[in-house]
Amino acid sequence: MSYAILKTLHLLAIIVWIGGMVFAHFFLRPAVGVLEPAVRVRLMHAVLGRFFGAVLAAVAVALVTGLWMIGQVAKQVVQAGGHFSMPLEWTIMATLGIVMMLIFGHIRFGLYKRLSRAVPAADWPAGAAALAQIRSWVLVNLVLGMLIVLVTLIGVPR
Image (cartoon, helix red, strand yellow):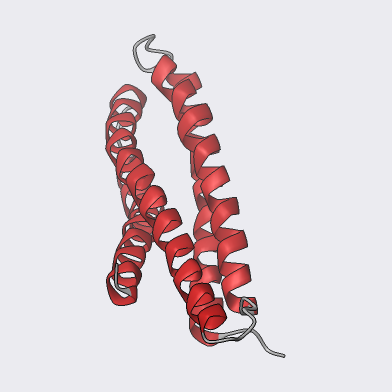
């Protein structure tokens, strides 16, 4: 697969993930704050379920395309007789990207699971607590995502 196609897919996956976090954290969450707890928790559960499905796909695409691009560049360098040394920006991007994926795994398979148990039980305080934890971890991931974007675009001072 061509590097340009891989990079495009990689960037689109990141746009979905980071853009969705910005939307949910800064626009959706404050807007639903006026709703009654039962309605708010049900709505956020439904929205997050859809969003987390998209993020799961985005994570898979970002991981596969990122590794594939690194592999392609490494292969080209070695075939040309050189020694591949991954740039610091790529190392930071890959490391923080994996940390983000792990945090997302905690959000999706831990915290969202708690939210999913609270909704059918009509346990609105437990649902609100799960949402608060999700919000905190989403903010951490959003900061990491923005840091990755800055490091990738601006670089690291040497």
